[in-house]
Length: 368
Image (cartoon, rainbow, N blue to C red; front, side, top):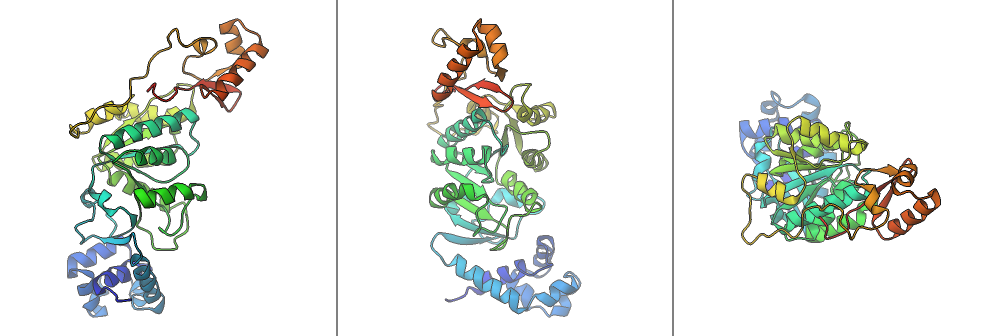
C-alpha cells in the first residue's frame, strides 16, 4: 500500500499519546502543516509538546497506529478528513475546539449540507420516538441533513427519519469508528454507512467511555445550524448538547410535553431558558434563518384534537398519561371494561402502556 505522506503526518500527530487536539492546533499555527511540524527538530517542538508526548511521537506503537489508520482509510467508503481538507465541515471551524482529524464512513458530501441536530432521551416513550422520527423525516424531505449520536431512543428514531428523506443523516460516534455502540444499533449503523455518514474524532479501537460522549455532543451541535431536543430529563446528555449548541451560536428548539412526564422536564427547562418551543417541523424551518429549499411542501398536517371519529375510551384520555382508575371515573366504565378497551387500543397502536400503570394516547401516522 502506497502511503500518503501528508495523511500519515496528520495521523502521527493525532495518534501520539499526550498530544491533545489543542496542542496539535498550536503546532499547526506555529509551524504549518503536519509534514512541516514533523520536519522540525524535536527540540524546537519541546516548547509546545509535553515531554512524554514528545518521546512517544516517533515510537513504534504510534507508527503501528498510523499504519492501521492508513489501511482503514484505503477501504472503499472510508475517508480521513483533516482540518486542511476542502471537505472539512465549515461550521465545525466556528467552534472553539474543532477536531484536527475526522474518521468518516459513508457519504462524505453530507458534511457540506445544511443540517439540524435532533437529540433526546435514550429511554424515550413510544410517542417521543414517533415524534422524533416524524420531525426528522419531514426535515430530511425539506433538504436538511439530520445529525445525532446513534444512541438508543430519540437518536435512533431521528436517524431512521433522516434516512427516509434526501437530506439523509450523520451519526457522530463516541467511540472509534470501527466500534459500534450500542450494539443494538448495529443494523441501523450499517444502513447509515450505506446511505448516510458515520463520523468520529476518536482513534480506531477507542472503546465507549463516559468522558467521550460530552466531546461527541459538541460535534453533534457543531455540525448543525440548530439543535432540536425531543424528550429529555433535567440531568441528561441531551441538555449538554443543547448547551453546546447555544454556546456555539446555534438555534435551540424543544418539543414540549406533559407536565407530568419526567422526560418533558428537560425540554421545559430549555424553553424557560430561551429555547424555541416547536410543535411541528414547519416551526423549525421557519426559525432557521429563513431556511427554505425550493419546492418544499409540508407533508404533515398539524396535530388535531379529537373529533367524532375518536370514539370510546380515546375521547376521555386526552394527551397526558392517565391511570385506569381515572379512566373508569371519566368514562363511567368498570376496571375490566377499561382494561379490555386499553388492550384493544394498544394492539391497534393508538395507546402506549407506560411505567407505573399509566397509559398515553398515541397519534397515528398521518395525524401530525
